Amino acid sequence: MTDTVSSPVRLPIGSIDAVEFDVVAWGPAHADVDFSVACMFEHELGAGMAGGLLALDQALGGALSRLRAAGAFRAQPMETLLVTTPPPGVTPRAVLVIGMGDPALLDGDVLRRACRVALREAIRYGAESMAFAPSVLDAGHTDNAALNMQEVMLDGMMEALRAEHMVAEAGLARAPVLRHCTFDVGAPRLQAAGRAFAEAFARLTAAQQAASGARA
Image 1 (cartoon, rainbow, N blue to C red):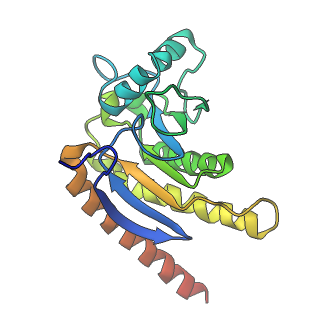
Image 2: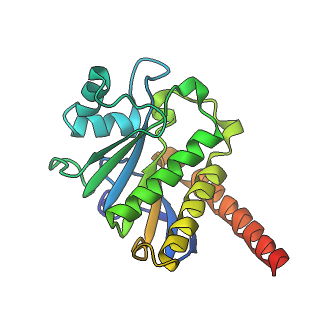
C-alpha cells in the first residue's frame, strides 16, 4: 500500500517564474515542505477548530488556541505567527500562521492578501518549497462559492511572486529560491480542487499574456 503521507498524490496546476504549483491532500502539520502556511480566524463559526487547523494546533500542543485565547496572537487580519522550531510531530521545517480576522467578513481581498503574505514570507525565509492551507472550511466558513477561491489564491501568489522578482531584478534583494508551491486540500476534494486550480491558472496566465501583448 502506498504511504499517502510520504508519497502524496500531486495534481499539477502549472509553472510560472520557475515555481511549480500543485495540489496535495495533506494538512499544514504534515506538509513535507520547508515552509507550511495555515490561516486562522479570530474565532470559528461553530464549535471550534476542525480539520487541518485542528491537527496543527494539536501537533503544536494546543499552542495556537492558547496563544489566541491569551491575546498573544489575536489572528487579526494579516497578523502573523512564525514557528521556527516546530516539535517532532510537525513535518514542515517552519510554520507560518496568518490571521484572517472575523470569519463573517471574509472576502476575496482578505484571501488574496493572505496569499501574498504567505508567498512573500516563504521567500524571505529562504524556502525552496511551501504549502498553503486557507483553513476556511476548518473555521466553519462553508458558504464560499462566491469567493472564487482557486483563482483568488493563485492571483495573490502570482502577484507576490512577480513583485519579489522585480525587487531582485532591481538589485535590492537576492533572487527567490522558491521552486514549489502546494495548495493543501482535503482528500475528498482533491480531484475537484485540482481541476479548479488548473482552470484558474490557465485563465490567469492567458490574461497575463494578453496584457503583455497589449503593452508590447
